[in-house]
Image (cartoon, rainbow over all chains, first blue to last red; front, side, top):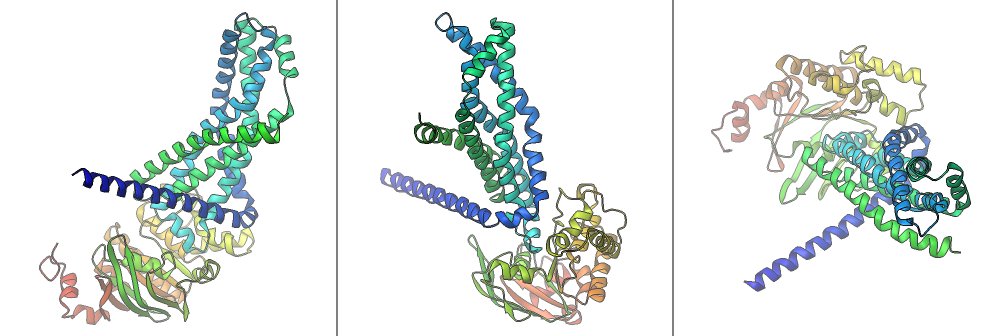
Amino acid sequence: MEELIAIRGARYARRRVFDWIAEVGRLALLLGDAARHTVPALRSFGLVIQQMSAIGVGSLGLVFVVSLFTGAVAAVQAAYQFSSMVPLKYLGAVIIRSVIIELGPVLTALVVGGRVGASIAAELGTMKVTEQIDALRAMAINPVRYLVVPRLIASIVMLPVVTIFANAIAIFGGFVVAVTAVGVSPHVYETGVKQFFFMKDLYSGLLKAMFFGAIIGTMGCHYGFATEGGAEGVGQATTRAVVGACVLVLISDYVLANVLFRFIFAE
Amino acid sequence: MIRIRGLAKRLGTKQVLDGLDLEIATGETVVVIGRSGTGKSVLLKHIVGLMEPDRGAIEIDGEDIVGMKESDLNRIRMRFGMLFQGSALFDSLTVGENVGLALREHLRLPAAEIRRRVAERLEWVGLQGVEDMKPASLSGGMRKRVGLARAIAMDPAFILYDEPTTGLDPIMADVIDQLIRDMQRRLQVTSVVVTHDLASAFKVGDRFAMLDQGRIIFQGTPEEMRSTAHPLARQFMEGTSAGPVRA
């Protein structure tokens, strides 16, 4: 009996490993296909603009709320942790560095990843199960060029743009709390922000945002295209895209932090 | 001319097509009939290169499309129009954009010419002034007609119809049948109609081909179909559960 369970377990593990390898293979093929079709896709620039609006402009409201409160919470937390050990003149400095390097890019990616990753996977998944992707291919229109590349480009370009917006709002949120609740004067907050603003922090944050954009677009398109079945399949694809995007954003954040601050922007 | 030889396709554990042979002459309309799940739609998808067979050959005017490069396949696909079972209209586009999509993507035509062609094709299928509507606001019959207008936008040499009358009331089904006949006259196209609606099949078909267990088990004119002694074709014609096939 135990031998049977061991054999079944081994088979299950082997199947999962093969499934995972196949999934990585499909993802690589999709990205390769997207790279080959990037130049042709740019000829239909209207599609890219349309997606930039949907992904970037469409996310601004949500990002505004999340960033405002992120900055506000950062100010409250920092003030609490400073207690009487660190002068409050450094409040602005802590907020700007934590927001620009980490909170802005990562929280924006998680929020946009949830919204945009789900939307791309659901839209492409529905197109797949209702034969719209087959219809495109039957019309000699490559679905990767027409659907995937514009979404990928828009995600890569718009994530940094939205991140800049998120950074500004978060710093403003921190300012409001610092001035009204913590008792820091506007001038002191501003001085701290200016003194500890470094361009390399901004560049590293935006570079991370570009990577996160690529991850979100890729996950949405990959799981959308892999959708099978009906409404249930679309639901599963949406969930996988969001979970995949969020997990990969956090993992790649760690990897990028090491690469950026140990090698590229090392002091 | 479409010539299919020894076409085989396995999906999962099921051998859907198993050495299928079929020839469709230029200008002819062949109706492929068969029970649900016998691989009729799979056959259509192979003809336009949406699926790759495990074995066999599909020749379109003498060119074998099996294993063809995507760019060459697209050249062949541009000679095809396909009406999908659920119409497969693009939800995010308007009716006019749906019908004009292939024109915009493949032909360097001025916008006014595309608009004119879109309006003309929509008029051919009996729809006028619907260019700005979204597919979601159309009835089932209208969606089929828009799908047909989209299929004929590029003046195809071949049109594939996947269950064109399924889900329509008898009057709308007859309208679609008339449109299929109109397209044959107007464009002299070669057509393959997949259906299990026999009334529709007899209205549009020049020849019948019955698919079962992955092969064509009967071929003949509508008259031969009516008088066939083939047990399964007979059972299908009579629409009875008593016969060689049991549920």
